[in-house]
Amino acid sequence: MSRLARVYERYADVVPDFPAFLAAHGAPAPLHVRVNTLKADTGRVRSRLAAAGIPAAEEPWCPGLLRLDAPEGFAPGTTLLHALGHIYVQSASSAVPAVGLAPEPGHRVLDLCAAPGSKTTLLVQQMEDTGCVVANEPNRKRLRSLATNLERMGAGSVLVTAYSGQNFPKRVRFDRVLVDVPCSGEGTWRGPAARPRRIRPDFRDYLVRQQSALLRRAYEVLEPGGELVYSTCTYAPEENEGVVGPFLEETGARVIPLEVAVPAEPGLTVWDGRRFPGDLRLACRLYPHRFDSEGFFVVRVAKP
Image (cartoon, rainbow, N blue to C red; front, top):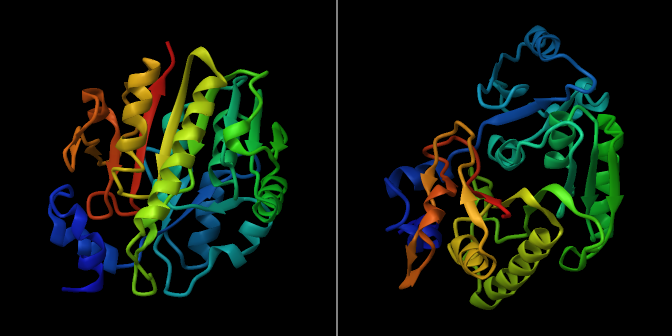
């Protein structure tokens, strides 16, 4: 049995076409960049890339997200387009939570776990740099990368905070909240250079406690009638349905369709003897052999 098969074998009965799933993890993920519409025009960026011999195809579900047909070793982060803030290197799966949150111009939005800023800057673009996005990041080292990216992208409607997410102040309410929690990262292990590993149960338990606390605080600061998106880049039901299921039962919140046109499998309602609320079928599980990017779990929740 290969190392990949040993690491992911716990999902063999969950993931459809498991051999194709393993093969996708053994291959590199495609390279995507997102055009920063605050500073640049998608057509002109595509023309600049084409002139450099790099064709770029726009993803139909996310305007400005370009899949690059680039030679091996090409690093878009070293280009002038990147330095000027005209593009942001971002995987396709990473864009799904922000697109699914669908904030509107003028909204108050909280990105509870914001660094390095990929989703934050996409939220700002969706809102046309109006309203207010609060980008929260407690880790001081990651906070620097967040601030650098916000400045490079010209995001003016952002307020940066450094609270522990579980203790974010309750005195302000938001129309939308994105809670892209720290996780075991199993969905990011793609390509020959990846080093997949089994996650220790005690570490998984620690993550679940943190994720649950972050989700509950995100809900507490959400306006009635508001919406949040909870996401991870892992396949572990403990960190996904196992976190969201009890939260739904305790709060009476409801899952609503994500409305992002990407190929996804439904969320789980049963795992390892545990049962989860039936409307978790509306959650999205992104697998690399179905949607050629990183593995993700994304669910959209409405507050009554």
